[in-house]
Amino acid sequence: MRQQIVAGNWKMNKTLEEGLELTKGILEKVEKPKGLVVIAPPLTHLKEIGKMIKVRKYFHLAAQNCHHEPKGAYTGEVAADMVASVGAEFVIIGHSERRQYFKEKNDVLAAKVNACIARGMRPIFCCGEPLHIREVDTHVGYVAKQLKAGLFHLKEEDFRKVVIAYEPIWAIGTGRTASAQQAQDMHLAIRVLVAKKYGKAIADDTTILYGGSCNAQNAQELFSQPDVDGGLIGGASLKAEDFATIIAALK
Ligand code: 13P
Image 1 (tube, rainbow, N blue to C red):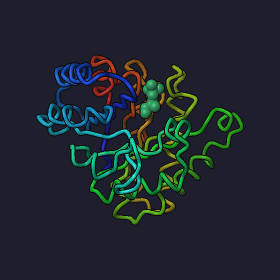
Image 2: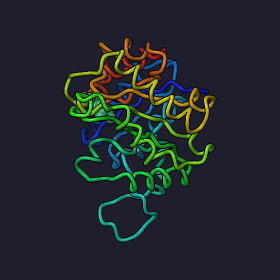
Image 3: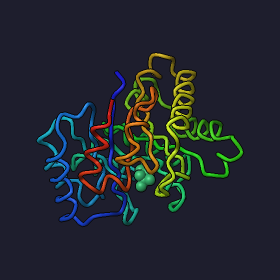
Image 4: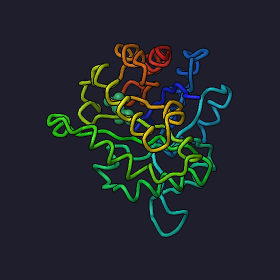
């Protein structure tokens, strides 16, 4: 069954103490969400925040990244096995910031997806086009290439574990969100691509999140679209009240 999810990607924000305070606030404000709530704090906070959210069965923990190799001489990196060992159930893979600032290419992203699934976690696989691609109207083809390169090598049973997050780069952290119609059109296009590869039943079951300046004011309109199954939230996930309002907007 397709799941509704709101995931908070904290990016590189909050000390452990601040993160625990934020989590406490979220737990206080969120009651009986209509879907799953996923928290993706910095790697250093996973274990402590995982302990805190364990009391609610619909709260889940995500890592923002992991390395694709199982272990070895990769100073500063953390393997899938390691984030799983401190409670991560999801891993965000292919975020545009990782693609842009850390030069993560499709082959590495596909390997990260494999590492994550092999360790029993679910990838939240990000895709999305830059502004110049949107302006020349080739965004569907651009995203199709990202999905083919990063995800479509998976066997059917593994693909079922994947959550897709559509995050148009021009909307991330800019305050310029995609319109509900733009989000719906792209989410439908992604679902059609999944259907072509894996069949309609799996496509109908795939969770596709929207990310990019999604906030307490616009979440309801975005989530009301038939192919938008929730959101991957950056800035607005750092305020308990706003994040709780976004969670309450799930359909
Ligand atoms: P903002 O919500 O801050 O635009 O970030 C979106 C995002 O990148 C989530 O992964």
